[in-house]
Length: 431
Image 1 (tube, rainbow, N blue to C red):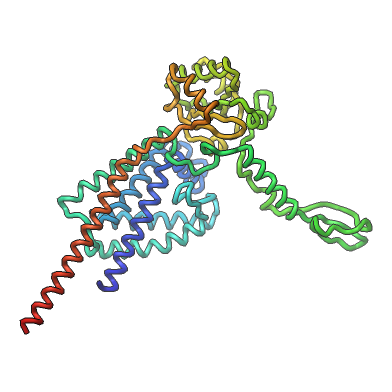
Image 2: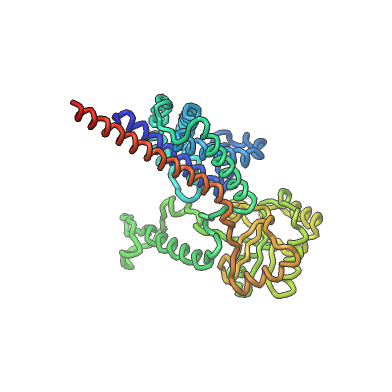
């Protein structure tokens, strides 16, 4: 195989893997992708983007599917010209965007690989600079790429890839992510993590603080480990802007209607707490109101706390109560924290002693007759909801077909090589 052909195949495989992994990880959390799309629009357009905010989720879903399909087509060597051209166009666009956000530093991380792999803006730019010439090379010599399936066969793996990634994305959007790569996932000991993070921050704050003292005309700064004697007069202390502005790793601050902090009471409740989260009550799904109200009634009857948690205004809260008959206490929490904790609106989290026992969307709430068994299994047995592996069934079949195609290509090349060697040996014998 020539050097050009080797580079072409290597570029095809690298691009294919990057796009498949990127699309798949975005598809795990399409709501998170929608939030990231909003950050990009906000960075570029400012407040002018608000009127199109309803398009962020469809754009996120479309991006997941397109990225995965382009990567799948490149790996299988099917629809080579259109896949390579679209890949090049996407790389050009993404490189331009990452140049902009690297200069402005207006987006925290690129979101290229969802919440599993965090890349800084500079790291993302380096990645795109490496992949961009590869995508051009693949587009330039698309016809020379290896293919695993013929024109007659290619529609089968293509359709399976499309249906598989679409179904996977839809289920993750409707029933919460298949794998939660953020804090607050099931089994997460929030109480312990908050204490550890706070202790670490306090230690770093103490180490990073400079104490300014004066002695006559001399003014010097000291660390906590080398404070001066009593002949010096203390004036002030200084911390770096990075320490001052550092965001909490795990935020769970919430207040009741009287402004009283409730997070410590909830995190230390050893009986069990049910928290119904909603980013905004006006946008919350009301299809399962009867189940929610019955959950509250049952929790109240058996001594479990039940709270609604939202970033809504008092007026929006009043409207929710009027429309749904909600009688449970509602707490206020920052919108960013709610979006990090749960992607559903509304969504239910079950906690006990600060540990997240369960996390479900309103679509997965138990029916009224199954609420007692649901509460018992969570509060007494500590069982959480496990996503169905059926979400990955079609993608698993596609991966099997990809592997089958690779084995078939390898067999063809081995047979071709054996045929050439055998023919060469026969010619030599005849001579």
